[in-house]
Length: 251
Image (cartoon, rainbow, N blue to C red; front, side, top):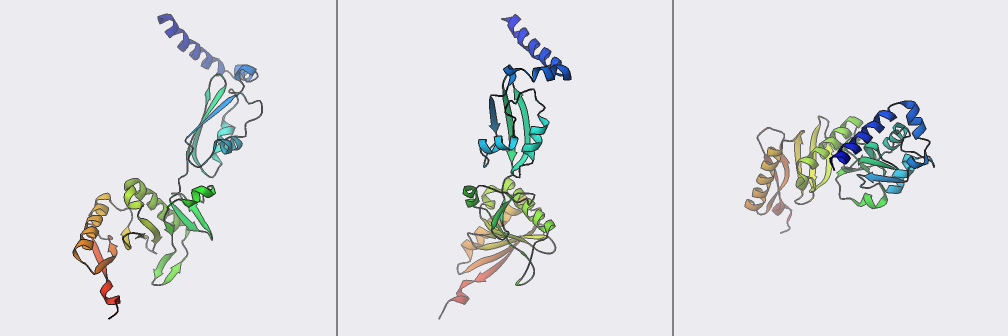
């Protein structure tokens, strides 16, 4: 029992030492025994096994001892792939482990297009385009005058949305629209209740929790008046601006 336990690690070490010699690696790459017969793909969310294999573009007689750097480079070039690793699974398999780019919002471009935290356009399958994500709106430099987002503004906005999703998924799920102004302040429009959150990124988790508490309290204590905007631009302060619904009621 003990001799077998020592034998297999020794064989593995010996094989690794052998393949470190280019001539031996080339010889092994010509053996049918090491021809790739199975490819396992880990980390898929929107990509499919077929799409990944097509992007990998393995040659018909691919061998596990082939240089994997070219395969990795082809996979990394796919617009939905954020990171990827390719490793051998001896004697006849490869394992592709990837991390996909995750959409954080929709950008009107001019049709709704998903974008990730780095503001990259993501060619997601049609079914994935039905995700419930915030809509990125043009910035407002002056009331009623939308200005097209610059690349820097867009990246800042998508980065902040990604951070919010990691920090507080429940709050992120309430965001229906997001915009950014000329000085870089973020405005998040919540779907329910209908209120805008105005703040300077990055928003501290404690400040967001305090704002949620104040907002719930305002809804409970002021019937007939609902918050229209919550201003969090000042550290340690939550300023609530109300909309008086009774002013819009007919006599």
